[in-house]
Each structure stands twice: as C-alpha cells, then as structure tokens.
Length: 310
Image (cartoon, rainbow, N blue to C red):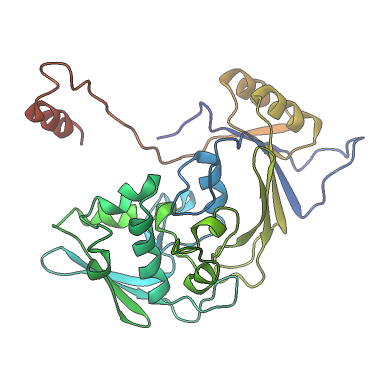
C-alpha cells in the first residue's frame, strides 16, 4: 500500500541551475526532518520513526527486505535459513568473511547474542521478539549457537514461517557487535547506555553523532560488504515545522524534506524544479478495546476481533 500523508519526500532535481546560495558538498545529503521523537539509537530500544530511519542504514539484519525488490525476503547477514519439521526450530547459517565497522568478524554468536540482548533488556520493541515465547529466563536455551557460523531459534509453538522471517527484518532484530558493546558495558547493561548514542553495526553508514532535537550525522563506511554507497555522509537536520522543511528544499538548503503535510506535498508536486516521491513503508496498527465495556470485557469477544483481521 502506498502512503502519502506524512511520509513524503521531496528531492531536488538534478537539472537545477546553480543557486545563488552556498551549496552543500556533492558527497553529502542534507535531510530536513522532525527527529525530536528519538529517545535512543540502540536498536534494542529504538521504536520511533526518525530513529528507525537512521538505524536502517547503520545496522544489518539476518534477513532483509527492500522496496526495489517488492519487499521479498533476501539474505542479509544470514546466507540461508531453514525450519525443522515441527515448525518450531529455525536454523540460520551466517555469511562468512563479513565484518562490523570495528573490523571484528560477524559471527553466529553476535547474531544470537543480539537477539538474546533484546529479550533481556526488554525495552519498548522487545515484544516483537518475545511474542514467540522468549523470556529473559529461557532465551539462552531458546536461542543457541551451534557453530561459529550457525545458530538456532526455537519458538514456543509453530508460527507462520513468513510471519517469523518478516519479523526478523525489523530494526529490533539488528545484529550488534557483541565485543564492542561489551567493552562499554556498565553494571551489566550489555552496552545499553553507550549504544543509546553510539553505534556498533555493520551497515553502509556508521553513526558519527546524534544531538537530540538538533541533528544526526551518518558517515560512509569503507568497503561495506553490501557494495559502495553514493554519498559520503548524511546530515539529518531537525526542523519541527513541515512548512519550514518545505522551504528549505525550495531554497536548496536541504536535498530532502520528509513528513510533509498534504498541502506542502501538493506545493512540492507543483514545483517543476522539485520531485515528489511516494514510498512504501511498513506500519504497525493497534486495535484497542475498552475493557470496562460489558461486551469488550469478554475474552471471547476480543478473540473474535482478532480473528476478523487477516
């Protein structure tokens, strides 16, 4: 499904004549966005739009999906995966020779530990992983390393395989450099305090800086395993007002304006020197019910509502 609403992007056209104001470097992308929703850049805790957008480029996951390939499941850090006959135990084989930004090799232990860490920390997005019957008490038995390149995840019951695999494309399932994170551990937090404002990933960019309510700077990583990227750095500037974000693009002071209102989007679309892009994005929808209502307080009614949704 295509979404316009608040997830629109406006790109400066390549054919623009040189403006009278100072241009940003050709190897730097400047994005005007509202990023005051970010509370952390630890993938085990991040659950806000702006933070997720940045982390998508900083960390890799076992399985990946891309709009360019119609969101088909593709190998990420995992070379292959399979499931047992009972549908409960999944085996992942890691690609060999890949490295984190630190230069440390990416191993099955890093992948297993990263998922265990999500469950143990139990931050906001942990439910995405824990819904498969994983708890801080059992996670080390349910997620096990079987070799330097393989590990298994056992769920409490059989789930739709497509559902389980797609869950592992979420930011919370990012693979973290265990060695770097543990080097910054404080009081058994598995590097949590440090990773809120630093990165230990393997994606095409690394986090250079995050200033709350101000900016995020991402910097290109040399020899990224997934191939070269076109830009050396990405500067995400906090601009609270949508109209101001639009103005920055129109003036050439930003290359992209995100989360525009319908009116601003229409104005961008009408500007021959700018381009409006649609994008497909995953969404989580919540269905809430007032449990004080006589009917809605019945578990059978809630179950019926659940079953109404495909």
